[in-house]
Length: 339
Image (cartoon, rainbow, N blue to C red; front, side, top):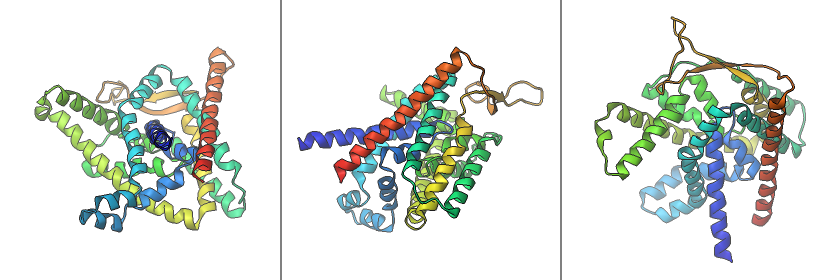
């Protein structure tokens, strides 16, 4: 029975990673929200915080088992396994759904954000001047970011490294969408679509014994960009976890109020009813990315008229709320079992 329970726990950890990975890929949605709502956010931050000098000393001394146990290796390993699987599977499904069913996908995400706001705020009782101010600042920043215009694509490796550091913010800070920040920095397609697809194509070719990618300069450039981006993400993940662990210990109420504010502000990013504004070249033709698709500069958001489409969007919003409530119920059960 115990081995079955252990196997079940491992499976759920991978599924949690799938959820975080999928959420991190979607502009406006934060993987940290999934961790927060599913009840493993603090364990996630504390585990990352263990990647420190002591951990590296254990590693350099060859004490691999001690290193693995010290950083909560099973937890982090299975979680990241789920995230990696997500980037090569669920993420592609999401790309397809957003392309063909954009309104309904955004409606689900909008509902998930609303559900997350309810979940995080329902047990928060420490409302006072400082926490109300933190809430207002978080909401203002979140909303302000959602209306900024994106920059142009930049594959400079130092900038790509910086993008990696910023992109993981959504994993450690609920409500702060790293993928949306990548859109603002102009590198969302380069780092979360083109480079990931280049790696997937390379894997599929190597499996069949085809090593022609070594002579493909564009493919090699993409793989180099992805490697630098991944390195920046690892550095950012560890750095943010140390900072957040300190802040949560010393300023927990203000931090949670800020997180609630960020999430409220992110509603502007995922508002379902919007029309894309595409980037234009000087000759007024559309600016295309490396896949030949029009590059989105920003969105015109509007209030919908009552129609079948609007009712369906509302229905999918309710589904999004239900998903978060289901995660909450699961998180509560998990905490009780671990108590």
